[in-house]
Amino acid sequence: MAEETTPQEESQETDEIVEETVARVLPDDPILAGLAEPFPSVVFTSFQPLAGPRQDTATVPREELLPFAEAMKDAGFETFVDVCSVDHLNRDPRFDVVINLLSMEHTQRLIVKVGVPGDDPTLPSITGVYAGANFYEREVWDLMGIAFEGHPDLTRIVLPDEWVGHPLRKDYEVGSVPVQFKGSHKSS
Image (cartoon, rainbow, N blue to C red; front, side, top):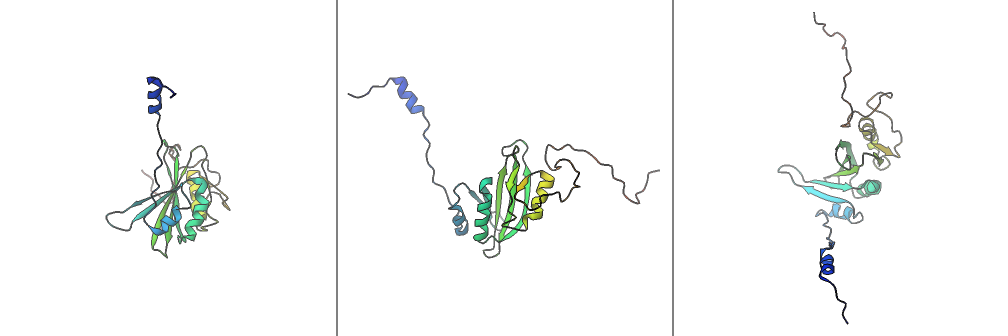
């Protein structure tokens, strides 16, 4: 005998949300597609401006940054260009760390974005993979307060050692420091 259901039970069953598995779209570039396969959580986007080369971006979870950096170097992105950070005060994750890499072999650039939460502003250091990141990571630490775990010498590089805080954060108090320049004219 078949099990009977009431109309109320039937409507509850149909109201359930069924998650569909969406196939991941790999980048059309063969080098980036090779990078995407072993890192399923990395999201690749591409933008073609009206003038200039295509701009490829990889958004990487912070716990995968170090293995992804090693894979990028192995894939031919051998030149570290720079790293910077952005403070999105009212967003989660609060910070974005943006790493720019270049492949001379493939004449291609790659922008790597990593979200960093405001309550735990840490990221693994990539200085072991790209030695040129050393001073850039120190600058991000000094001005934005994002610590790079495993950095060989994470100390201030722009501000004096006794400086308190990180002045490029959007919640840093704006103040002024009176400066007297040598030989400045005094008003009479």
